[in-house]
Image 1 (cartoon, rainbow, N blue to C red):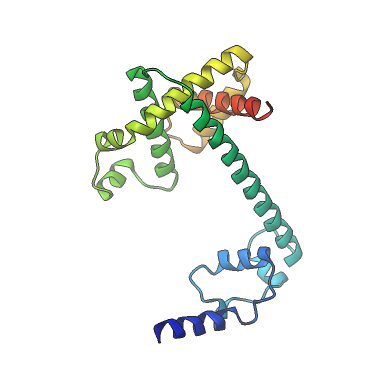
Image 2 (cartoon, rainbow, N blue to C red):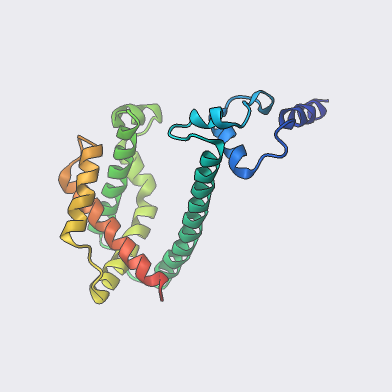
Length: 210
């Protein structure tokens, strides 16, 4: 009976929206995440205006279509890069210096702190909420940090050989974006993070062209 009732409710929720495109469905779902489909508003120009600087429903639809296409492109690129990473790490042997593992862990913590701060929370409160310490996170992340450190050694070697280092202008521009967005950001840590991200991007782009 519960299954039948759930199916009936599901069918009822879709009434009036069965002919919607993927873009229209995505927009309505985003705007009414906690609302049953049976109560969704009509797809029209007035609804489109509630999303910001859109005058018509068609404008909103085209924007969503563009975003979906971009997301799919990024997902595909991530899959390619993941396969490259796995292959590079698999073919590389040898011990990783402890200082490099610690450096990668520091960068992971910096990224976590930046993300938490960006949504208005304090790192201390977050750690209390998950009932963990910074040391706990470092321990849990060690295996991943070791893998990252190995990858960074490979990327650095390729970068040096192929002259793929980011320019000072590129580094300063991205550091400025971070320090403007995160007022409490440590400039030196932000720079280290940016240098690595830019170098990674250049090396991955190079490898994807091979």
